[in-house]
Image 1 (cartoon, helix red, strand yellow):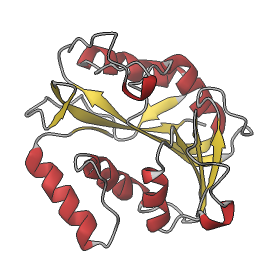
Image 2 (cartoon, rainbow, N blue to C red):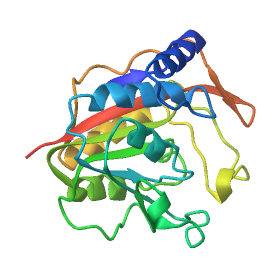
Image 3 (spheres, rainbow, N blue to C red):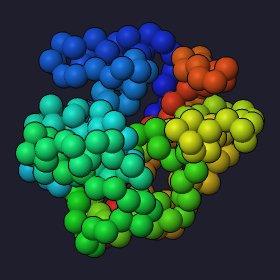
Length: 220
């Protein structure tokens, strides 16, 4: 899967689909597109499949996966807010603080890995895909979304959302990322060309751009 969020109408449609299905919607409406694609991708997956959210942040993706009925959910992030205060038994998932590029989990632990709006914040893609390859079981799925525009949009180095660097990937950089993933045994599901950008339905820090979603399958 290689999908580009084309326009604002698609955001509205994705939001309506989630609402009609009784699924939680995101505080950032554009991310409903990410989550609707994720729900479609995981529809045939056993609900007991082990899933790790790499860069779980405020746990929106984990909450969404729990609403889809998945029961073996884990998340890792550099910082887990109120990890000590929050009673583990009150959460439908397990959380760990740590580096998503060097996780403490065993080889071939997961059927699915998710990473939504994460890799644009200073993630070493070679280390990321190597870790994904290590963690996934054979035929496992990696689902990634990130900020995107066909041509390069420069970002001042002083802009640090969440205290982290930020980039908007260009078409060339996304193709390089896909090639790198394939070097680590991760092949795009239903491989197609990168779709053309139409509108820029996302605006942040005075930059207008869109999202891209990539889904890979572990070979062997």
